[in-house]
Image (cartoon, rainbow, N blue to C red; front, top):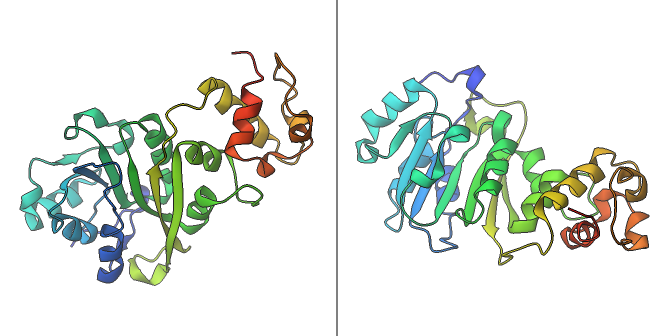
Length: 254
């Protein structure tokens, strides 16, 4: 049996029903055929993904011991299992056409995983991931929520985010100190923001960088070429929708 490694943030899921529920949460949105599992570990999720006849499963795993275990127990994934770091891999080499992402994501890199998804948003139509419940709730949070933040806005600009269900610590080995949550994100129909994307990201980060301040003060270092809606500037960043941030970004010179 593979021993979980603390430095890799490994917590192996042991509940078969939950693993099955996660695997069945992929809807095929975006007409993809290829799916990449991030950090399959001992393969409890892999097993159910391999049973799906509508997808071709690929996987990437950093732990060499886990790779050996997976090859021994799931030889059908031979040639489609990479030993390496998801954050560094070239996703364009996985299959042909759109690619879905799924996994029990290590807590310590879950946000980075979604930032990479955003970089490849026109190639990744759907993601199903289990991560720390607090982070999962943050990504799905609507405007006005105290947990709504930078990654909430950026992800929701291009994806519809659903919080699916919670997972207790007891179903993992070793059990983490926090609850987990499973989310599903589906690429929306937005082809373009209608503004400079780099400016949009800069405005969002500046707004939340001083989230206790109103936008008028938080965006003090940003030069506007046309005046933004005065009402929006009286609000804190957590009150603004994606469309509100886009409206402000349109008023900034690139």
